[in-house]
Amino acid sequence: MIEIDFYEKKKQLHEEMLEAIRQLFILGGISEIDLMPEGELQRHAYVILSPDGCDSVHEAQVMKVFYEDDELSVEVNTYDGRISLEYAGIVVTDTLETLYEAVYGHVADINREYFMLTLDETGQPDGTIEPHTWRIEYAEQIKELHGFVYDNYNDAFSRVTL
Image 1 (cartoon, rainbow, N blue to C red):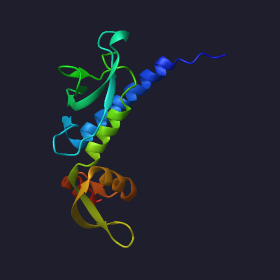
Image 2 (image 1 turned 120 degrees about the vertical axis):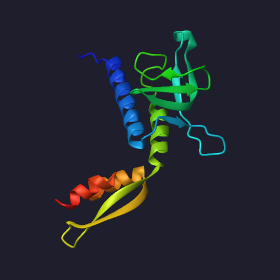
Image 3 (image 1 turned 30 degrees about the horizontal axis):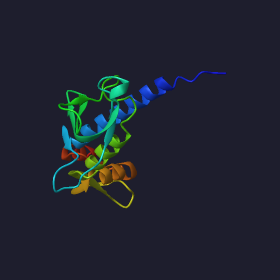
Image 4 (image 1 turned 180 degrees about the vertical axis):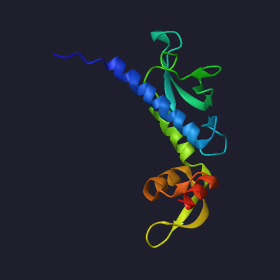
């Protein structure tokens, strides 16, 4: 019989979720998300906290998420101040799934300008660059399918001469 180290698996999953959330902040070019803005779309996310051991374990609603100096932190409705999401902190390991989904939804809805090369009948760039404003989620899908979509004009222009 082989013993499975589920603690290590949860730790790895926690680190994977943190990295995925970091990448969303980087992709969105943002450092703060208010998940509960008044009068706007609210995205609900929860984490499980254990500020003082087993007797203090409780679920808390995330109000804001921050990304500063490569570290993620949150403000919740039951705790004063920011709480680091890093492994082995107050946030119970591997309880970030709703937070990831809320951050993903926020970043996916950001509209940004992208630059697309138009293609000739052979599928090669024809020298024309068209600006498009798309949701980040849609643009990332188009990049995967099309291959000639760029985040900035200079990158698109450098491909025209290839």
